[in-house]
Length: 367
Image 1 (cartoon, rainbow, N blue to C red):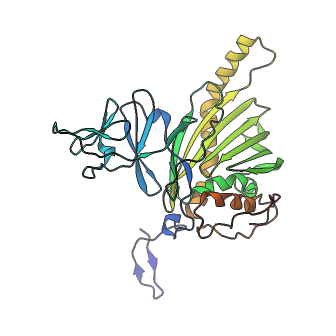
Image 2 (spheres, one colour):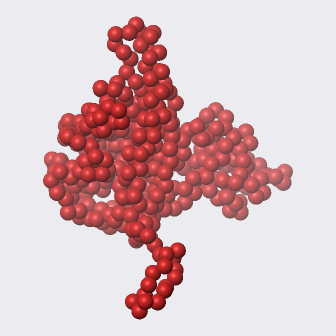
Image 3 (cartoon, rainbow, N blue to C red):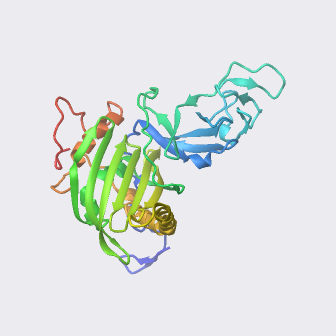
């Protein structure tokens, strides 16, 4: 509580909001995008576990069969509507918590708890995939089945992935747009001497970019940093970094998912590896590399989380401006926004019109 004085000098008491209004309090400016969206990490779904996760305003219920395959279903039992996320898995059957009706791997009801024939009922399956230690579910605005697949990007080193999840107001597109917003890397993240190795390549449902920059590292000062990014839809970024001077590499997958009209979650898996010293015998070089990776894993993960978190207060309260008033040095935000058009309904408001005719060259100041 904060006390203030009114104009006539009287004391006024009450609760007062400090800082910007969260994006969840603003009218939604972009619809839900289409595609594959991260809802869990692979280690969370052991056999017998039932998970409920939010996805675009609805719940999704996840479980794993005994042979390792995943199932994702709509959350309510077709019998009398109980939430299946409160149910259990018995063998390969998902069992409703209300009347204990069981549903097999194909979704059909296999038995009741009464000893009577099961009704002609089935749960609704959703398309689900696993890639890079992460579970993705397909959603499309008009219910279309998947018409493209997830690339299974390489995973670095032999140490297990570190997994994080964050939730905040905003829109998932902001997290992906950050990759092409080159201006913010200097202004917000304090990178210096940043240069693009090649123009950003927008290709179908993917885009790719490479950057060379410098980052300040404790005890070492400024060191050269090489960054390669690949995106798949508005739901996945693969970010690989190299610090040649330190012999350190990281490989992260960043996966933003809309859970409500102005709220999203970001899941990240990250791995690190250290270079093998060239002058040492191979067995000793491997031991040194693995030992260095284990020692550097904690500091590298904490530094990465701190870097990513610098964007959170921005996403938390920013408004989607369309068209943006871009300037030289922003990066290819305009081409990026035209590329995003394919992931939204045809009548989406505030999304740039689809690009027609021949491919347009990258431009930093058109949208």
